[in-house]
Length: 42
Image (cartoon, rainbow, N blue to C red):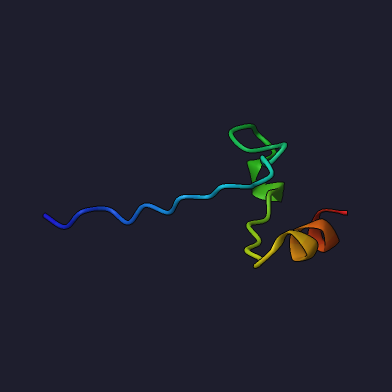
């Protein structure tokens, strides 16, 4: 059996609707760097 892939994330934003009835409204976005994160989050 293969080992699962695990990614360590040092800085992330929680999805507000994750695990709720509205979880389909969540979007997964990957960016590189804090300035890119700030651009996406705002």
